[in-house]
Image 1 (cartoon, rainbow, N blue to C red):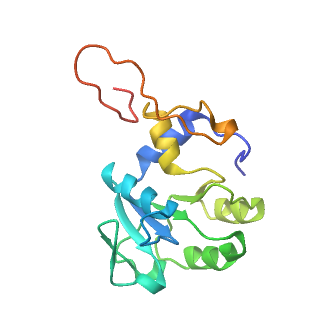
Image 2 (image 1 turned 180 degrees about the vertical axis):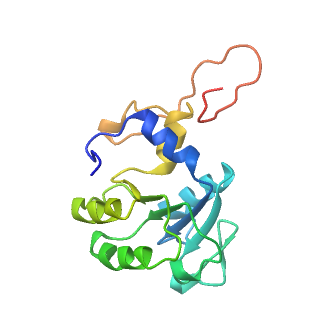
Image 3 (image 1 turned 120 degrees about the horizontal axis):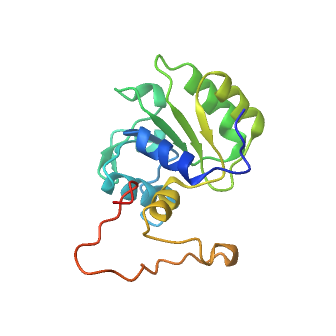
Length: 174
């Protein structure tokens, strides 16, 4: 079982670079919900999104067609990002384990942590990240935001001073 109290930057960077297709369980069409702007951000960074929301199935969320269940997604997804309450995790894990092709990664959003669920997923060969947001981690690792202010519940979006030339943000640091 992985160390879910501490994730190295190298580990998070490797996870984010290893995935291309992302299912977002609990995606919302409400543009002020975190799941919407995470979906929008991930799409802007080149990830292929598959929002999961039974009430929005067949409609677009953040420009991507929405599906009722994970099993309805027409492709194997690399990562499942979960925006649901912890009580919903057992059912979601059953749905994930029942897939013909398992995802490489299951990502539990900020405020969601369940070590027993993580252990079950890891026993199936799935990498688990808990209590983190892929949008925040991506932005932090590529220099778009820093951790300054996180302990005060304020996120700093102050960009670093730029050298001459074009500034490009990527996980590669290039």
